[in-house]
Image 1 (cartoon, one colour):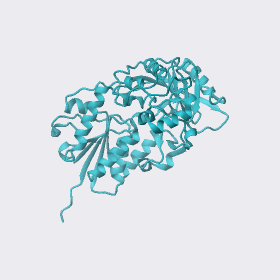
Image 2 (cartoon, rainbow, N blue to C red):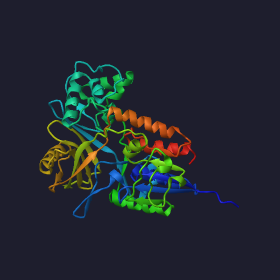
Image 3 (cartoon, rainbow, N blue to C red):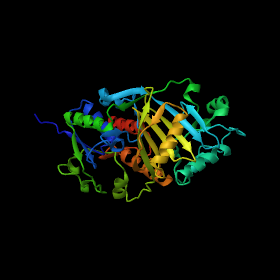
Length: 415
């Protein structure tokens, strides 16, 4: 009897999207596949990999896993800690400081002439989207984006999501806002209200008990036990002609049935489309601290909107803090600013260490030109059911949306 040839599937990128895709394929029960993962670094995990200092680990930044998502259930559950997803907002963009529980966007606490928004939802740039707010709100948001060193006219309006300014809560008009959101679809996108006013409970989130590095070591072991293969410290050089792609030793495009690109799209677009991305980024710092607390707090984060501080988020977990801020920050001043903000919510949490800074380029924002190009490339590859290459939907900011998209595409193609 002739043995049926195994389908060979190659995943480019060993970040969480690539790893979740590999686990999904290997756990589907189809034993007639080979799955290879190519990762340019010497360890998998991508942006989730931890910071290390003096034999202690710290989370890179606030990267929760959505406990109820189906793809998260593919991960080793015994290494995950599940907790209510608590978050807070600290805002001083409009000449007074507002703090709020259950809301992770800016809070406007001043008087307004009217809640009415300007124009409709046909905006393209972030600048146009922010200008849709009443002038009193728009001014503070424009100033904060400029404070971060960004040009809102160049950014696509979807950049409001990674910048955590997709919604604003005008606190003095809480009942009016709720009614307005129901009547106006554009207002519903621009305004938000806290969970407490919506009678919503906090969703469940998960984090690895011993950090992401050890978590991914276990996942790597699971994938190997399921028959997957890793090529770490290796790169793929694409080409307009599929057969001319340069692959790591032991791999050949002639023997690959499906290639799923989840890594950065820069090389794929440059080599195959002869196009160049703007690749806008934010120059950021993560500063990590040890702290003490008299009460055992579950993980939480505070979104910070301030024209006098470079802090953008404070993430607390297991008596540790990762402060996300722009590259202008210094650990000594950040420690004092962070403590002052924490005191507005939790007076018994005290920062004890001096802080260690790690620089990074964050590519979560996107230009208007890149948005159009990435959308075009995604549609080109993922609409061609006969093509070998599939790719991540790069214009999606949310990890869940990216992974769900790929898993549905895999099912649609009966892989």
